[in-house]
Image (cartoon, rainbow, N blue to C red; front, top):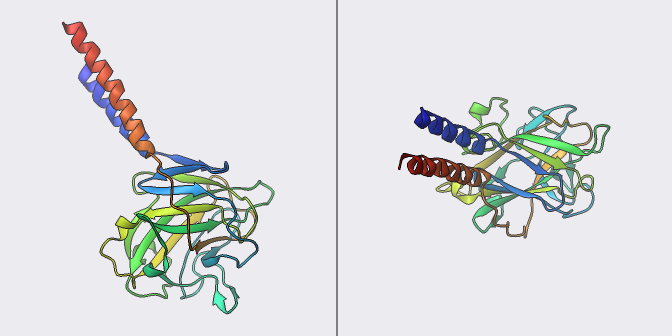
Length: 245
């Protein structure tokens, strides 16, 4: 009976460790999900077009989209500055390498009636041999390499810090997930926002950023949770042995 209780505790701990909501609504907040580091950042630029965006997404409530030069699938937005489209193909070699990670900058633009917060509830990366995708079927995007929800449903809570063109979050995706891929491979970044905190104002955009800071060392939340559970179970087991003696 006691053995089954211990087993149930371990299963519960493992499930809890996998479920994680990362709150990046305070200055400097940082956390880890499935090996990737996410950090709230101070503005890195000023004004629309100040950062090198490769996909813009905008819709009221929930919104989704991905980068492509093949059009504006889902809720992606067109437009350009200095002759360069805001939504376009990128190749793996276009993404800066920072230490053991590839760095991506997210700029949100939420200052409407429900406040300045926004939920990122899906983030997925794919590699494919060609650009110009037009599909709205994620199964046709290419080879999946990393997902926010690989282990369970996760969400990142964001806070708009300075309007558009400034940057609000740096996402550091482990370079190891791209191991063996050609730098000429086309990278698709698919993201979805708005649940539970909805989109109610301007566009969200992902961009590359040169000279991104080296990410801080942050323990994986699941690792700490499992360590705590392990110690708890070890204590129970030790007490059982002492009682038996």
